[in-house]
Image (cartoon, rainbow, N blue to C red):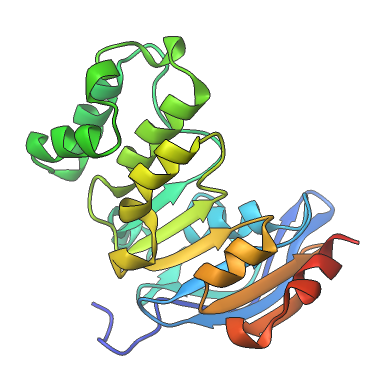
Length: 230
């Protein structure tokens, strides 16, 4: 078990390659428990790769990574059930209904079925929950993916542009499940400097897989973030 005051995420000189291309190189950071880290950078900067490494879906090729007090990848088995990953793919079965998908996930995590119904209601998906995913809009599928992400009450949320495809009503519905008010540690990728900085305690800006901007959110300006995209 991690000590109470131990950081939720600690990276030192982290690197990950795709063949001969370095997707991440030399990333070092510390995220205290309960803090929000906003991750900025242009497409291909390494944001999604970083989250996938922390979610134990990819192995680092360089450096060290500790998540919730456990060393990755050696102790990845011990933290997978405490992480909620919301990526660009919903990680749900298209031919199953939303309710079937979530009930399946609930059995995997030993979660009571009442939690599934609670989340369907909170995200406004209860009335459409018995329709196959392939018949639903991208926004509805994203709401169900949010349900999957928080179903098991994870300590760490890894959120890759979590509000993509959501209309204002859906954003309002999922905010209590994903936002700062949850008290969870959150790593959130964003292309919106103003919104991302407003939600963050810490900032990491990536460019070409390397750290270009890093620090406490109050010390980072919107112009600092916008420079990453030039």
